[in-house]
Image (cartoon, rainbow, N blue to C red; front, side, top):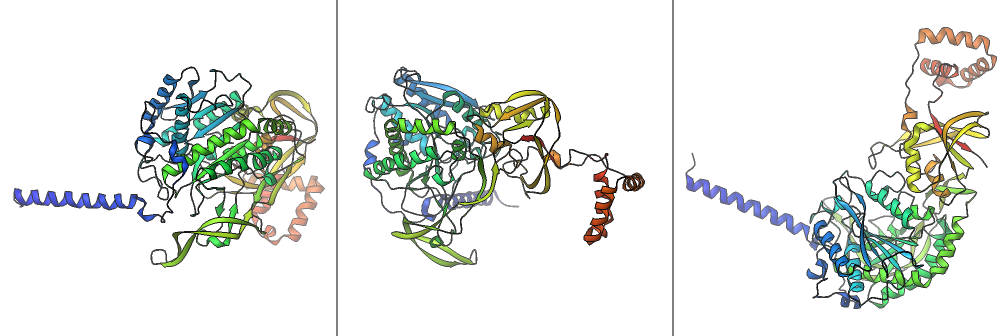
Length: 601
C-alpha cells in the first residue's frame, strides 16, 4: 500500500500531466498552425470606439471576441432603449432548443411604410461565421449615436444578428480549425446537426422557415447573407458573390448587381484598406495553379433561392485566414457600401425585379457542371510551396505569407448544362401530399384546390434510380431517370394545382420538377414510391400469366421478343416472372410513379 505522502505526490503528478495535456491542446487551438499573415492596417480601424454606453463586446476585446447569445440579446435591447423611435425588435421564430430568433427593425420614423428601399441583413446562419453580427452592431450604434444619421434617411434595415441561435451556443475555441477568431465561436449546424444554408427548398429547419416568412412579409429589396469562407489562402479579405449573369434565372437583377453595385462596393472597400475579391473556390487544394472553381449556387443556398424568387441576394464570404478584427471592419465597410449602392441604384434594381417577376422562361436549367474550358483572370494570391508530408504520405501545400499576382489564372465556371426542363403549364398534387402543399404555401407560392375531369396531363415514371450511400442533411437523397406518359381524361378530386405563371413560378418548377437538383423528389419527400407493398406467389402468377398470354397477343409477342434478344432475361426466372406480373392488372400501379401530374403548355 502507498503511504499518504506517496498518494499526494501521485495525485500532484496526475494534475501536472493533465495541465500539460490541456496546454498542448490549447497550443493547437491558437493560430500558430495557420499560414503566416501579411500585416494589415486600414482606415476602417477608426470605426472602433473605446468608450460610450454602446461600446460593443467586440470593441471591448480589441476585436478578438464576439458575445454569446445572452449578451447579444442584451445589447440588442440596449440599442432599442437608446433609440426606440427608430429601432424595434421582433421575434421571428423559436429554435429547437427554445431560443428566440430576434430581428431588429430600423427605419427613420419607426415605420417601413416610407417608400425607402429595405435591406435584409442576416448573420450567423453558420454561427461560427459571426462577423456580420459584430459589424452591424457597430453600424447600428453609430446610427443611434447620430454619427451615421444619413443611413436611415436612405434605407430601412432588417437585421438578424444570429439566425442559427442553437449552433451559436455550441461555442468553443475548437470549432473551426482554419479560422482566425473570434476566440470562441459557434458551431456550423443547428441543434439537430442540420445546415441551415442547405435548407432553402426543403424547409426542415425552424430558422429557414423564419427567414422565408420574413421575406414574404416584408418583401425586402436586397438580401445580404454573411459568412466566412473555407479554403485556400489569398490576399482578399472580403469576398462576395451573387448568381452570375450567365447562370441566373433573373439575369436583369444579376446584371444590376454586377454592373452597378460591384464597382461601388469594390471602390469603397479598397479606399479604406480592404481587398475585395470574387467568391471562388479552388479546383485542387494541393495545386492552386490548376485553377479556380466558379461555383453556381443551387436553390438550397440563400443566393440560389433568392435568384429564383427574383430577390436580389448577395452572399458574403469573408476570408477565414484573416484576423477577426480585419474581417469585422471589412464587413462594416461592405454593408455601408451596400447601403450606398441600394440608395443610389434603387430605380434600376426595382425595375429589374419587376421585369423578372413577369418573365417565365420556356426552359429552366436544373443541373450544372464545371466547364472543361477555362476563362483566365487576374488574381491576388499568396505564394506557396509543396512538401512531402510523412503524415499523409502525399505532397501537401504550405503557404508562406508572400504576395503573388496571377495574371492568367484559369477559372472553370459551372457553364456546362447537364439537365434542362421545359417549363410546364401547371402541376397537380394529390391531397395526401398536404405537407408538400404546406411547404409551397410557406414559400409564398400560390396553390389552388381543384376538382373535376382533366385532359392533357402527364404521368412521370421512374425508370432507373440511385440512392445516396449515406444521409445528407438528415435525408436519403435520390437521383433518377424518368419516362413521361400522356394520360387520358382523368378525374381529380380534392387535388391541388400549382400554375407556373406566377411571380414565384421559377421556384415552383425547381421544387416540383423531379429532375431538379433541389426538388422535393431528390430530397427524398417521395421515397415511398420506391416501396413494393403487395407481392405475388408463383403458384398464382404462373397459371394467370399463361391465360393472359393466350388471350393477349400483344403481351405475348413482347414477351417472346424479350426472350429472343435478352439472354439475361431469358435465363433469369425472377426477371421473367416479375415482368409478367407487371403486365397483370394486379400489379401496383403506383410503384415508381411520381405522384405529381404535369400539364404541358
